[in-house]
Every structure is written in structure tokens, then in C-alpha cells.
Image 1 (cartoon, rainbow, N blue to C red):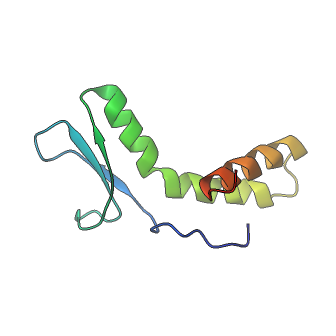
Image 2 (image 1 turned 60 degrees about the vertical axis):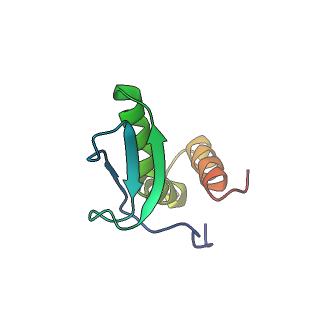
Length: 90
């Protein structure tokens, strides 16, 4: 958990203002730094975009819980496994 993530810092936002079935994830609210594109229509595509946009916040939350020495050991293990996966170590 001491390693700094190598991805673009958050917050990330999802946007679908182009009138097509493409949801883009940006690292800034102005839409200048695209992170990802999700192609498709409907609620599932939008939900996938929202989940990706939440990634930096989710990572930070997992780090906080994993450092909480009062958390149950299994909770810490689950958080650390997810953090390793996010860092490409799993």
C-alpha cells in the first residue's frame, strides 16, 4: 500500500454528450483527458461507465479500510486483494 498508483489521478467523470451511444470517462470535468470509452446503449452501459469513473474513489476507500487495524482480518484481506488487482499485481 506504500506504492503510489501509476494511473491518472481522480476524480473521473462519465459523459455522454455527443449524441451517440458512446460513454466517455474523463479525468477532468471539462473533457480534456479521456480515460476510456464504453460503447453501447442503455442503463448497463451507463452503469459500467459510472463504475469505471468511480475507480479512483473506490481505490482510496479500500486503502482506508485496509489500513484500519480495527477491521476484521478477512475484511483487510479482501481489500488488499482488490488493491493488488487494481495495481496489476494479482
